[in-house]
Image (cartoon, rainbow, N blue to C red; front, side, top):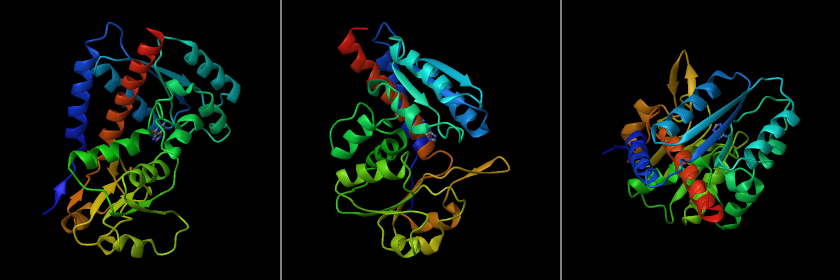
Length: 283
Ligand code: GUN
């Protein structure tokens, strides 16, 4: 029997809980999002993030910068946000336009406000197994969804397809810390299919519609689809859901799987940073 991993339901439960807890504070957590340029997908993501923040009683600020902005100009905005005690969390929407230095811009974020956990301080602490201020939202959301359905990770063979800093690398670390045996595949990997066929759990962050078909699946595997592929306004994941789902024990839908969990974890991270700053600085 196949169980659909309902990210929307799980995310709503988490968000409802954060909303209740937020009411106990006289101040509101505040998330700032920096959006550079006019990438339509990024514009939608940012809008969803700020609407969701406001719907649970947070404040949000979106800083829209033109696509020809310079590194120094973006850095100036980050420094102002770092200094502003009303701002608890800073997110720079990725990808940035080609001419910008992503590393320099992300590194400028104060680690205590780094809601994505992308600075070398927080990411380094994740690698070392220390407590970062924040853990990247999509990987954290994947693990939370797996836990929600009591899927055991210990000793499981997990194939992660994709090695990005946003998903592949951090999710591999989190899985390994939960005693899974992790294989990381990527665009240069040879014969991903045969790795997949041996895997108890497949996490696909490839960005190619229908990349995962029934030939990749061991009977009763768990399949987590992180892909968001747009075709004529229809969003699909990396997995050919209709043909793959019947072979699996658990599978995420797209939309309604990992996506809502990412936003829920962004709100959770914002709230956690707010609480840390609250206790450290008595804001
Ligand atoms: N672009 C796609 N996913 C993410 C994310 O989790 N954080 C940021 N900052 N940009 C993204």
